[in-house]
Amino acid sequence: MVERLSLADIEAAREWRTGVVQTTPLESSHPLSVSLGVPVWLKCENQQRAGSYKVRGAYTRISRLSEAERRRGVVAASAGNHGGGVAYAAAILGPPATIVVPQGTPANNRAKLSAYGGAIISGPTPPAPAPQPLAPTTPHSPHSPLIPPTAAPDTPPALAAPPAPP
Image 1 (cartoon, rainbow, N blue to C red):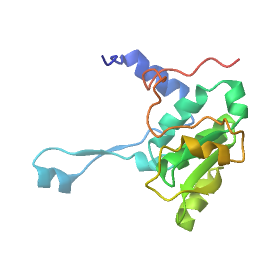
Image 2 (image 1 turned 120 degrees about the horizontal axis):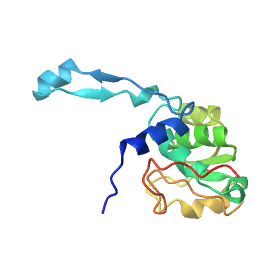
Image 3 (image 1 turned 30 degrees about the horizontal axis):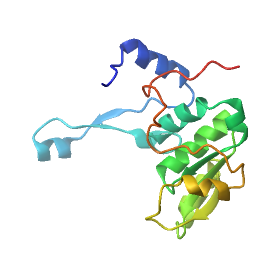
Image 4 (image 1 turned 120 degrees about the vertical axis):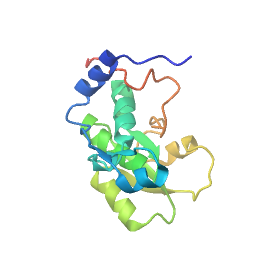
């Protein structure tokens, strides 16, 4: 059963993500509205500091790690928006981030991830098995937490506040 979010949940999430996640505009699209015959609105998440909405989940997940887990660094497997979100969130929250990208990832993608603070290493070219086995090849601990591109099974509703600082 899906837990319903309350307005208080949403307001709390907005509060603790202030300064990390930007409020992005909601813009109407006349061409799409005409084409589809219904009003179409676009949420401009491309205007986030890390370039997409992925920073929201990455920040939430990393903020929920223990201090011991953060010291080991974090790992993500992505040459795109998820990798950028993890690198950016890690830069804010402190743990070193290793972003595993497929061999052949364009230089501009690697540069973007590096600019956000991620250490970039090449992994296998997709399709590959789940990225967890890549963790031992990172410059951090072989037990660095993997930050998945989707909500982790142990993550409460996405808008849950992070744990209180120690």
